Length: 115
Length: 112
Image 1: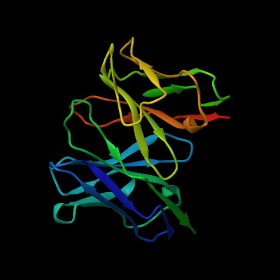
Image 2 (image 1 turned 180 degrees about the horizontal axis):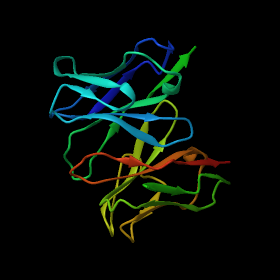
Image 3 (image 1 turned 90 degrees about the vertical axis):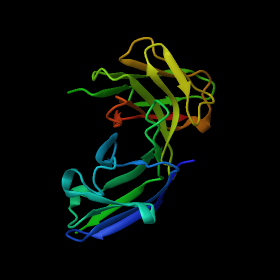
């Protein structure tokens, strides 16, 4: 069975500092991996996705994630945090099968950015 | 671009009451989903639909029913609300080939 573990339910960084949000997955088949962002009182928006084309995936708003098969990880990074990055971030995995795009979500990491 | 629209945005129910949440998408997507979001648990799939007239159970279907009479609409019903159904409900839609789900803004439901 697939699963996703996000390490750290809360992460706090200073504005301008590196953002690192951790995600580890388990999957019996090559996975599709996603990062979604949820701003307060809004739905989820896709940040980026990995579908085996390239191990380093660039997304919107300066975020990127690297797929590391040997570590079963898909950590999200941004070189310099901005106040507007404060949100909750969800990692999700799909095996691309099942006929309905089944997504398994992690519990989420809430990112706080302080001046 | 409307995308995925959920109504209502907020609702308070008393235990035992019923209600229907509406999800509408204007992207001509085949697949639609209902999730619930609870603190520390991420999103969990309640029911989904792979096309008009078809529905199936997800991870946590008990206490909910759904219908997809029109391709663009996906309804989630609570027949007899319970406090355990207090949650934020999200609808999403997707095309299989792209494997990306697009989400609505959510419905915050409180059951007293």
